[in-house]
Amino acid sequence: MTPAQIVWILVKVLIMVGFVLNLAAILTWADRRQSSMIQDRIGPNRAVVKIFGKEFRLAGLLHPAADGLKFFTKEDFMPPNADKLLFILAPIMAMAMVFTLVGTIPFGDTVCMHQFHLNWPNIFSGPAVPRYGTCAIDAKNGVYPVDLVVAPLGVGILYVFAMSGQGIIGAAIAGWSSDNKFSLMGALRAASQMVSYEVTLGMSLIGAMMIYGTVRLDDMVRWQEQHTWGIFVQPLAFFLFFAAAVAENKRIPFDLPEAESELVSGYFTEYAGMKFGMFYFAEYAEVVTGSMLLVTIFLGGWALPFFHRDGLTIEFGSWHLGTWLIPHVWMTIIGVLAFFGKVLALCFLQVFVRWALPRFRYDQLMKLGWRILLPASFANILVTGVVWLALDKAGPEVSNGLKLLADITQGILAVGIALTVVRIVMIFLAPVKHDRTMLGSSAHQAARRGGTKAAPMQA
Image (tube, rainbow, N blue to C red; front, side, top):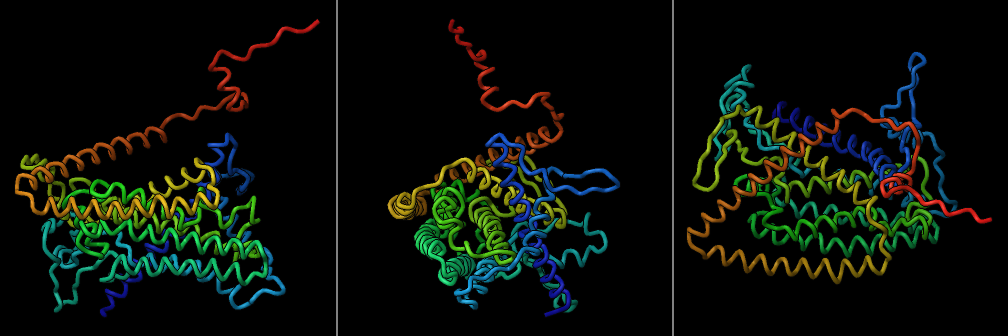
């Protein structure tokens, strides 16, 4: 391994781990902010920094930093009769299993270092790389292509399932080692829930693997780049995987293992200080990694509509509207930003889901997994196999029609992404309106309907 390859590995680790850590911290703020908006409250605004007599609140973004200081400074309590080894090991396992998944998720296309080597130092204006084929290797000068994934494993999604299943162990031994009945009940709930939804999680991807013809995550993205996003060829699988992923993360409406109204805090009731912080932080890190998998398998990964390795090509079937070649370094940057942008959107969607849906009963939770989601995943496999075989035996006219349909979906996505970006920019540029009076949502609703009626006074 050359020194350049070692440096690239360190850079990729820093990018992925840094993104997960920082986004997980921001999600703790987003949860509070979203809940306050839905419940008509003020939200996080108590954490403040004073500089030269002026207070800076930064819209509540100081709260994640305050949480970190709180976790480090609180007492590290351990129950007297707890199994000390397992009690300490549980939060470590919960945290470690999340970051073992990060290393296998690609966040960009392969970087052709040979192209940079030839055009140095004018890499930002160099020629585009070919759309198809592999990157050139210059072994004489030690120049090799760089895959934008920490560990490009051949087993791909199979490794992800193997590691994600280990998260059950952390919750189970945390509840068992705490010497607390509420913790034990929460651990039993967590184990049964995660095992149940792990089956749906795996079965929902069988149809996608049949279509992509691979288990490698980067090859799945390349298939979507050449055809269309996975959500259009496997729409049911996307929603099944999304629901199962939320259940695996044990978030509302699937937060039965830590239901405060029933089990105090569930399997981590006896944890305090940084040990509790590791469980707390691992949940948000799981949201990020789950969103990364959804983006990679169903939302095109680093791909954008009509963007390919050589630049922008707009075409619909046999109608070619134009090609604009873009230097390789810019295409790499666009792909990385597209991947992380999609992950951000899915993370905030999960935050909205948490505060928009009520919690299930435990029997409803298990029925949903075994009687609805799992049979639906089996049906998706059957329908996918039948349709795929039928299309494989169809003639060229059907293939051309599917190609046109795929290009139309790309056009719809391009328009949707453009409108979303414009809408976000308009929201940020809109002037802030301050109400002079503090009114609840009930007062606003009553005013819209003509105000309240006063009953006549009785004599």
